[in-house]
Amino acid sequence: MALNREWHRQNRMPPRATREQRIKWHAAHAIACACRAIPDSIRPDVEKLLKLRRRTS
Image (cartoon, rainbow, N blue to C red):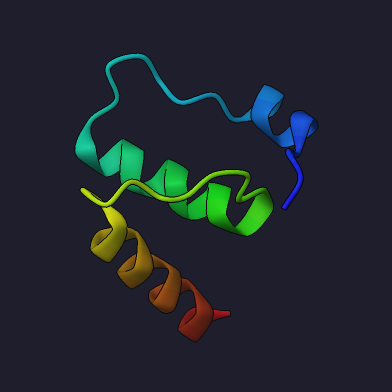
């Protein structure tokens, strides 16, 4: 998928982001842009969050 520059401009990863912030950012990124893969270290948590968002939508 191509880079969504506007999304990236408006949604910067916070400096020294906590694990929770990283999970939320990557979940939103997977929906809006997905220009790169989710890091393996947080992939299960991001996928869990994405499933929860799909259920509530």
